[in-house]
Length: 325
Image: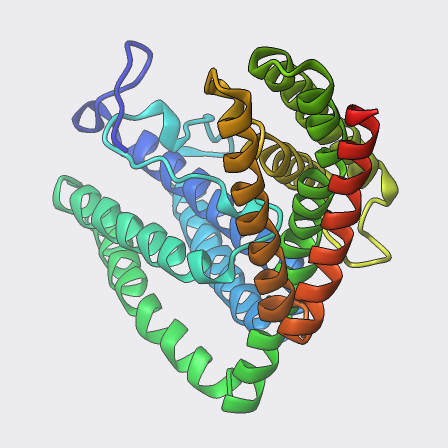
């Protein structure tokens, strides 16, 4: 998005010295972004990482040319002027810091960065009165325009069909380990472990309000517990399961969702109607769990159904017996 605050300079107010300083800082920042992306991608996506390393090397060459011109025109001291200090520049979300890194979002981001740089150099060259600076900025605008074509050539040469298939498999595995597994573990725990206290409360108190409070408390408590357990189980560096700051919240949230789902029917005043509806919700939850296991964990659907339904039924029975006694 484009933003402007009182501390930002207008682009038209920049001198030639400031434009070169801004361009140097921008090229250095982009090179570091591309290297950060390459470093994050290298373990699972080596071919794509090499493309971003080559793109970073091109940014370094642009920075070298700009510094040489700056030293020739203005001396050794380069003032600190960044894109955030000037109005009109787009601020990109730091997707290269996300965990897990979504490879699909990286290429559009790179295209946006290169496009913005091209427009910056074109505008800067158009208002430059120094012939040598104007030529350099125009050459860099042309170079940025060719980067998209260069990236496509690199993808064609490095990302063969076999490499694309391997990287797609690695991305799928990463998604399973970092999102699906902790989410499924949380959903199973929340959907099953909270059944006993919920139905025990329903049969013991015969009160929808009391049962709702017990169900919500069990769901929230289980969510916090599972989130902490998953987040503290390992840091993901050796296991490859990704950041605990992602796995923990995913697991905790899905645990709470699994428990809250069959507690909400007790918003109804009629405890018997609410219990019947809660049982129906539980059935839907168990089918959903079996489907996720079949879809992502290579489990036979009916085998998963039998296992999940049997486990859920035993927990419900325990709650009914304890509450009815």
